[in-house]
Image 1 (tube, rainbow, N blue to C red):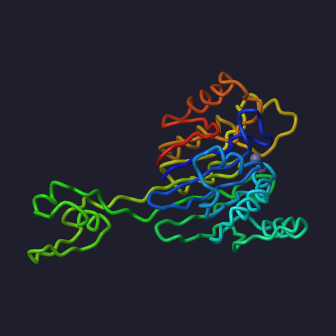
Image 2 (image 1 turned 60 degrees about the vertical axis):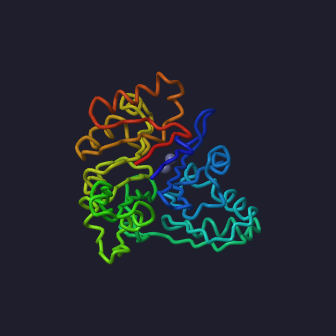
Amino acid sequence: MRLTFLGTSAGVPTRHRNVSALALERENESQWSLFDCGEATQHQILKSRLSLYRLRRIFITHLHGDHLYGLCGLLASRGMLQADAPLELYGPPGLDSFLRHAMELSQLHLPFELRIRELNAGEILDFGPYRIETVALSHSITSYGYVLIEAPRPGRFDPGKARELRIPEGPLYGRLQRGETIRLEDGRVVAPEEVLGPSRPGRRVIVAGDNDRPELFEPYGTVDLMVHEATYTQADFDRLPRKYQHTTARHLGIVAQEMGVAHLVATHISPRYDTEERVRELYREIREHYSGKLEIAHDFMELSV
Ligand SMILES: [Zn+2]
Ligand SMILES: [Zn+2]
């Protein structure tokens, strides 16, 4: 699957970073999902290779404006595209009321069905090949993390074994790969297990909302990817006259190391880190504690899991 960071700034946009939004595309699916929708997310989509027309699901982590205020404009524009496929919208309680009021007062009528579902902490959404678990986080308002957990995947296709069994190359390979049993022209039956390696565990990806306790994800253990805020370095946080409920780079590094996270992406970067050198301070602070693959997100950064 592929993730595209559409907004990586905390609180307010800067010249180089927009506010929170993250796109997720899965292999062999033409539709995609969006996590959070800060103001002007639709502009970011226009500058990416993503199409608003194909957007199918939106997950909102919490109702703070820097994660939410892009929603009405994005929905209105998707309507103008005459997209008629339903759009699913998930988020904490209050999301439905926020949106219904805004849509009613601005007379926004959508040509597609908008399915809004407010989630409770711990709720699990089953999408077939994967599920999404809702984790309650620690922030000044209700904030969720979403953990995407795939079902186990079939093993890797072994072309050597397929040749040994004299299976003709072509569409039969694909059918075996998808787990189908096939019958050859000479009448022999081949089961997928004969040409596939051992089944592989599904991937696990955490997309966290704002949160000052990353250890809340510890039950998920060694995930393939964790996208989590690191709004400040510890030194800057300690100097703040008023503390907001955010995670520091140091805290995130310690927890990610303990969890055994394979790949960590820090995002939701305070506007004070406005030069490459300042961003490196965040990187170095996490690195002091965490030895896995590490990146500080920037807008339009793409990565594969
Ligand atoms: Zn935020
Ligand atoms: Zn927030």
